[in-house]
Image 1 (spheres, rainbow, N blue to C red):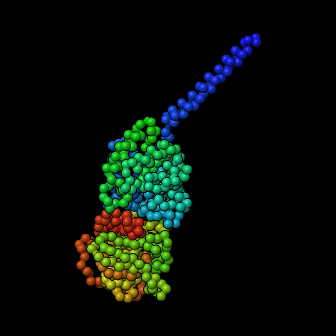
Image 2 (cartoon, one colour):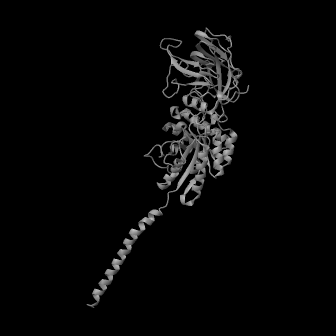
Image 3 (cartoon, helix red, strand yellow):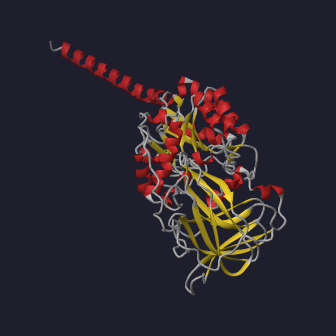
Length: 509
């Protein structure tokens, strides 16, 4: 017994030392192995396209060739315009598995609108797309601008998600931001996404948006494209060659199970079910004898209106230089105001002030079958005429309708008055204004629109339609809307100068 005890203690000690050695060996040798085989984080990629530009169709074809799908956010009021998709294009996109989303009716900065008008923009866009058979879940804010009110408005229309921009890290901006949105997103009505893809982005830039998410925390990466074109005048744009390279890379990358990356539409990524369609009707017409024009004497300014005048926008198209301004005094006194437009370098087209092309807050509501009395005081050093636009009651889009006879130059305040034909069926809003269709200056004030039933008597002096016609091109004389390139249309939309005389064509009479 006394001789055996030391032997047992030695045995135990050797065993303990061996166990410790095994643990230390595991600690030293195992750490690098675990780091090298650390599992990548799952990533979902959504390819999104804003506005419905016609050149995005070729991107859709490239995606289909590579087994990819995307989400196309459509400005429904521009659909069918030069430079934009047709309804047949949307049908082809959907048939290929792509998602059709809403991007408003006329692409306004929705954060500058009333909540009611913002809701009309979102609801009308969704209702139109839904009526064409699309399951609409996703929305993208025009200019990526939103407020809590607009987010509430969009959600009230039945959208289940809405995308912002510029709050996910890129190689160019937002260095301290997250590398991806979460799924499900923490704020479905303002999902986080990188800034839009610009012309100077490279293949490496696009790839990094995917790979940085995988090596960080994983998540959801929404990439936003606009034009797919080599035209340097388009902004923002991505070259077709670069998009093809990226699509091919993404298809191969996502096909490798080791990358745990999938490509889904926005709606499928979020995964919420389609909600019922919500209608947002326009307000009723002005009562008999009441002027339907908002801010008719230009006395109310607006910090959110690009023109500076509440419920008024710049209008125009063609080859000319137009300068718009607010002037004092107006027609009725030293403190009153009027608006003016001066055209120089005239080639074709026109320029004018118009009630804002919207869905009810500003543009007067009209009734099909009724006729309307238009009145506007003016001073001009050349001939002028009323140009008239109507709003489609189904889609909310605006169309050029008709123009009045000409009114002669007037050195002092003179009222132009004209009565329209019956409003055609299918239209519920109107916008109109005296225009310049040659070099010159036109100043206008005290604009009015009345249903001819109950309209007040016309003030004096009022012009007669006896202006001597000046030389104009045959295209301008027809008053059929000329073709305007998509960039011009979009630029004027941004500036508050959107004039669909160049986009939607003349309404049949």
